View 1 (cartoon, helix red, strand yellow):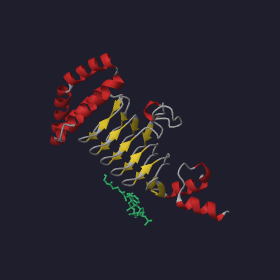
View 2 (cartoon, protein in one colour):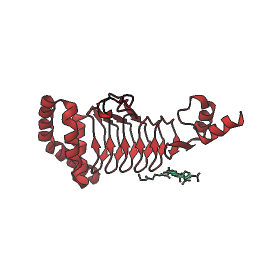
View 3 (cartoon, helix red, strand yellow):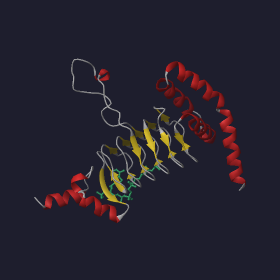
View 4 (cartoon, helix red, strand yellow):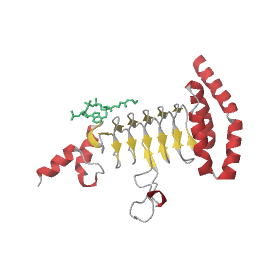
Length: 223
Ligand SMILES: CC(C)(COP(=O)(O)OP(=O)(O)OC[C@H]1O[C@@H](n2cnc3c(N)ncnc32)[C@H](O)[C@@H]1OP(=O)(O)O)[C@@H](O)C(=O)NCCC(=O)NCCS
């Protein structure tokens, strides 16, 4: 009970402390455009260390993002690049993450130095007469499903379903179904946290975005 009260008091103090930065940010956003203004503020806030940083970032993002839930922990060095990011309740982000235009559903758990980027085609590469940086690309929004866990240094470029696990250092290039455990580069399904999901995935082999070893074996056995 006492701990809860201290926490609530700290949240009130943090909210008061970020009022002026939020006002300055809004003026900056009005003058420069919100997409231009936001990343710099996220970078600045990411530099605040320890628990003080966690509380101040939470308070700031609650005021400026469309959604930032309860008991969110955004660690040192973690930067959001878009003001449209959405953070559910009890989301945890480790140190040094780079987060794009992403929805993080409730209880998403993201390790350290994870990048969640908007797809794989931020730039066109078809033309050779102009540099890649000048070629327009695509930025599909990425959703990290409820209770999904992303290991350290993973790169996620596509949606994760609910209750997924992404191994440390993995590179997710295609959407991952609910309950899947994926590892490697490119990430492949190693199993499911729920047996019925595995059965469903085998049944839906043709439609499965990432093919499991079991599905691949099943395919091979029919040829
Ligand atoms: C994905 C993970 C949860 C799997 O753990 P597990 O269920 O104990 O899995 P196992 O160790 O039994 O490994 C199963 C297989 O996947 C492989 N594997 C496990 N993690 C892997 C990874 N990150 N990358 C590539 N392969 C991996 C194993 O080598 C093994 O392969 P094999 O079947 O060919 O022998 C774990 O390895 C992991 O990466 N955890 C994240 C840790 C982390 O980043 N913590 C900090 C953030 S909170």
